Image 1 (cartoon, one colour):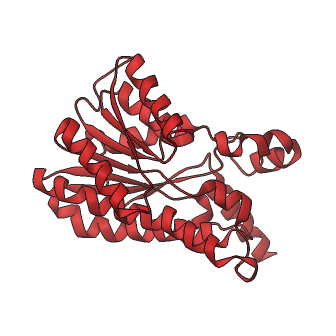
Image 2 (image 1 turned 90 degrees about the horizontal axis):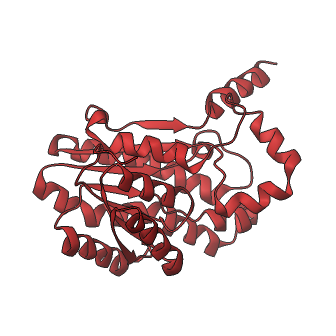
Length: 269
């Protein structure tokens, strides 16, 4: 069912060819937004765009490596040329596959993996924000949503580049909220728990015992779905959240609360 919570808002969503980004792009459109799908995966990105259009929504696609300033500027130009403004920037893109396959503890971590993780996951937030903020300032309003991770708050061992990059996203969110809050731009950060996306699905399917163990760390007793995060993003992008900025909001089924209390009990014992 379509409604008007984000009617006529223009939303740029990075990393929206699949997973949480695709779920957000489709849901934003269902709530009335005009959506620019941005991703390095042209085929899947166009698929997302077509899903929206076939359902009656308004969408365009831009190829964008968020770590590349020329790509980011081109992405913004597509949005401005198509709709004339940008109301929402959703910084969803991250090097999740790189994290799963090649991330390590610091002493085992290849420098190029560190650099690529930081370039996509953290620098990408900076570059996309740098490109979108001027048009938001011109219109006197805007929303920037960043995606961090429960790992940035309660780290696991062996994912040092991802944890550092996502921790940087949290700090950047807070700093930017201070910079732009009085200029009409709200900036918030979503911190998901374990969410099953296309990237992780095979691993989860092949490791049922590990899945059951991880589910046990969620108070809801299930893992997250991309739509769980997308629902929060829609709320934060809408006027319903006009009094919220600089917030780091967990969407994790109670993972951070439960695991944090468990760690405290371990320390006391």
